[in-house]
Image (tube, rainbow, N blue to C red; front, side):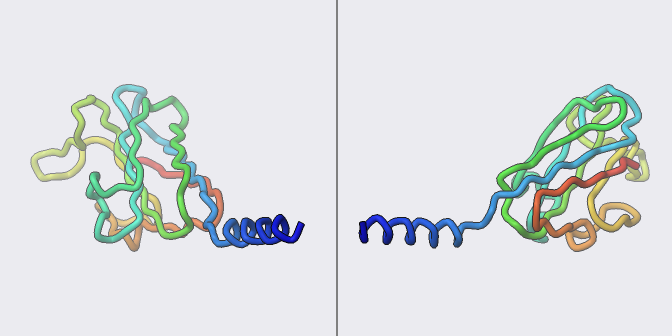
Length: 137
């Protein structure tokens, strides 16, 4: 009986020390059409920001009429920044004009800025399961 009580106590302490896995749901709105895909990535560091191989998660989804919903699960509490673009023509890249300005819509979490924000400006703190809305521009 004493051994069982000690085992239960140890299991409880181990569980208490394990961080809760969280879910981030991102609603993406204002796609121009239902053509192509929404290409998205989630990052958790300044060093990895906007470097797809260093993303903690990436997804590609067909855009829907009203909003496209992406779900990232199994995340630990902390800072995360999200970026996406609407690859309307399906060529696998964000198209730009001769001046380098995007011709396809894109979006980020965090504080809106002109152009691509820094990780700090795009970051949101994840403390619990969260739903965010990103408006493509």
